[in-house]
Image (cartoon, rainbow, N blue to C red; front, side):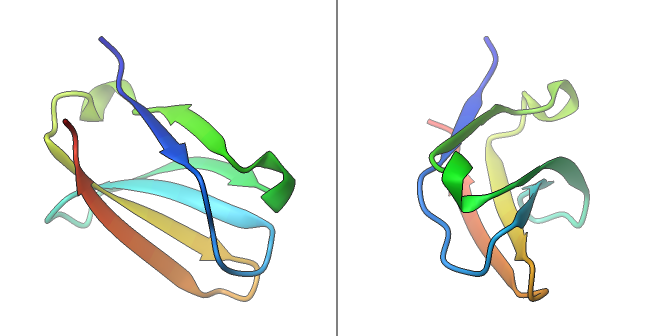
Length: 74
């Protein structure tokens, strides 16, 4: 069953680049380029990552600031 991730809030300057990384690893997948008007933003975890139990969401705002949030799939 596909895993979905919901981004409900981002603090920073729009637009944002969204990446999903494997927790504890430097491998990241580019997800999308979004504006604050698209939040809450829901996306499906890419197929190669579906079986991983943990992820880090990396958001890069238009000023180049990075926001990272790691979580476990429950």
